[in-house]
Image (cartoon, rainbow, N blue to C red; front, side, top):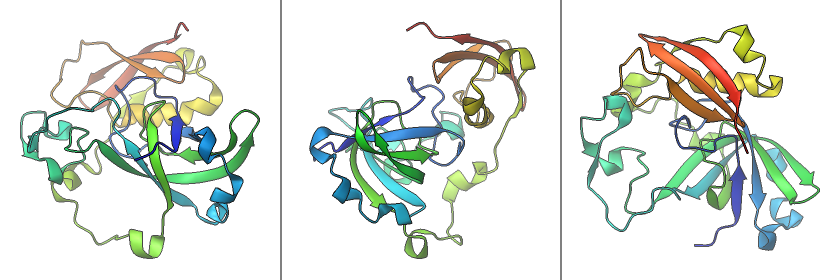
Length: 225
């Protein structure tokens, strides 16, 4: 398996990354190809597709051993499910699959042809093994059953983001950040309304608390480089 590209995203820490692709469509990222694969002809015809598949490596979860069961976070971190019934990063082979929107193919002054995508759930720098077009006539199954994961399909927090803190965030990053917060970045087993969490996003540390179904932002600070 050869690494053909890496993602450049606003997620510099694992905490807060959406649990699935497409949950935060307001987030944008760049797929930057490795020098060997910066060939414009390799992307010929791709602009006709609205969405693509990214096949990538859970580079922060590479292990020698594996377990046949895992604890899905949406089930509170206590109930075990078979690893092949989940999208857990802790797998026999640490491979991820994400469907993302292809916004554009751009000519970057440093990286050559890059892909601008929306809704990616990848940590900044994640290695990508392949890019494939998403085919709606065969890849979409609206009638499909979602198993135990379907129980949480509509789960969402109300986000209270005081203007004094929101205005510190660049305007182009606000929609994506609100979507990320609304998905509830916390581990599902943590229910402490007094606890202050810190989320790293787009160069900012966003502090928040959660009480019931309401997330309240209590601070935003630019991270030190």
